[in-house]
Length: 143
Image (cartoon, rainbow, N blue to C red; front, side, top):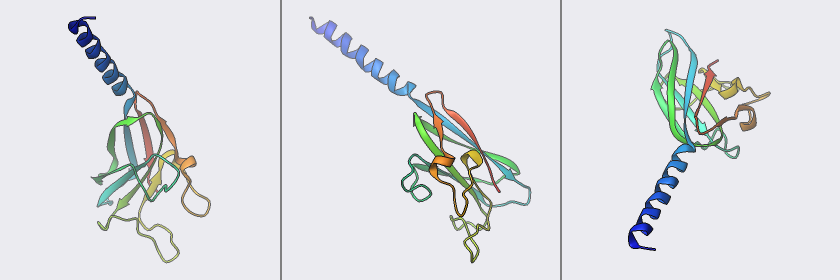
């Protein structure tokens, strides 16, 4: 093999690897609904990729100003796999979901798949959805 042909093969392999990796990444669009004109503050959206530590440890998160109707956040270049989303309206800017004395949320919140728990938050399994190479769109309805 000549130096030229070895170099050409190396370039082709590098390009194939690059395009294969890019094809396996997709964008996740999260539409958070249920906001009214009276709602103010920021919408916090967090993305989890595993059941362990769900609701405590996140792969990524974003904040966006609340707006009547719905807001949209996009998580870019995610590997194909299962994910779950949680969102809440942070009305007072303390970056946490406020609760009353009984532990019930006092700010609007929601999960992907509109998942609900029986006596507490839902599980990762209840909220999970898949993102493929083409990406995905999920809706979270705040309650």
